[in-house]
Length: 392
Image 1 (cartoon, one colour):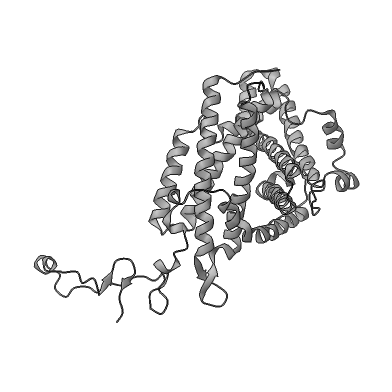
Image 2: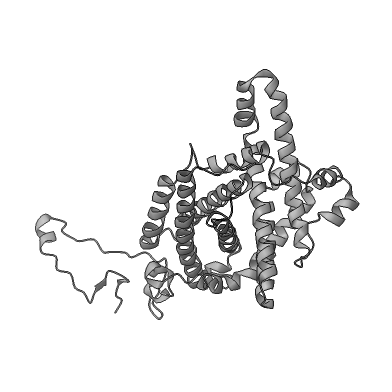
């Protein structure tokens, strides 16, 4: 039952994960500092409302920060396994490594997408981060597209039977339709203590077990007609389920990892923060896969709405901690973008007509000829390249 990864493939996965962790730290630190120090027009009609206070931006930023901490915890766990000479990695460890690397790459991709959406007008932040992210994602791709790793995790969890292997999953999964049993053993909507986070772990265990059993049964049926039918079954008809199975395996792994980190934490405030981050990550996974949860009858449409409300509320509670969370990553200042620091006055001058977002209007010349253009002399007192026209 032991099949260590090829040395070259293992080294590539570990190197890719290490680069992704460093790049994700830099990008998300820049994003949090940028959104926490830039203002936009708020309910008062004045430019005094922080970008981080806008709900849809706040949810995206908090989700990136929570997932970064979650993936770092998972990364350290798999690193301890693969770097320990006394441990022989199993197939489950291989699936965990591939899942962590996939999620780290997707985190970098989503952070780059967020930069494109929000601070797009600031070329320094855009070019310095998105160019790095695009180059990294291009050179570190595994397989034919970005989902190749997570699909391989789904394949390994089915063919190697890893993840939900205990016989108890079969019993509890058969009782999931009974409301009383669901409320007692897998209701993910309780306000969790550490012990109650086990409800979330059970919930995602049912998600993984349901998909694994469905794909496994379908494969056994298609094997009667030959390999071609098996290939089309997983790559054409159930390609979404295969990727979702790999994602469910990773979600179980990350929730279990955060529970272990919470258990080892001795500081009460740190335990509460880890618990809330675990809760937020769990609700984020439900929020992004609600189509699957409704289809598999794991949650009803009414509970999906409750999940979305809980998710928004938790993001609002964790948002004030984002600056402290990224500061604890200890990214050196020279590695961060200058535009992510508190430099509001660079593009908004109090007491003048120049403020963030105002367009600079340059008067046209009366005689737009070549000779007139050659005689132009720039007056530094009248025009400032950074702030625009100087009104005197």
